[in-house]
Image (tube, rainbow, N blue to C red):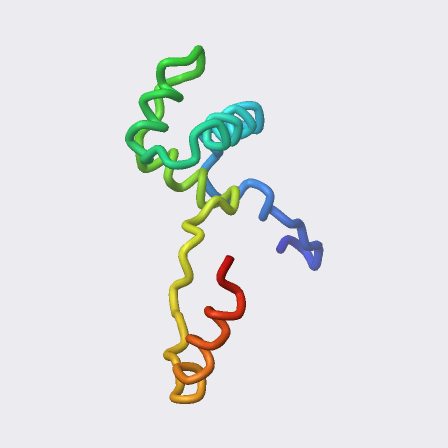
Length: 96
């Protein structure tokens, strides 16, 4: 703040992305081709390409930023007594 004038400098805050937008699209494409591969395998595949060499941590952080997280639920509600009674009947009815 200088002489009652405010200037926003927030656009310069933070570290620049190592993997740019084009690299993010490439990483997403590689992830969709084989979604069961580990971050180590994905990093090796990414580094084999024409782009700059990145660490596993960078790939992991980029995937999290892109919203690619584990599909497993973090919390599963416990079955109540009622659920345990109804579940076998439901399974019999829906068994093919």
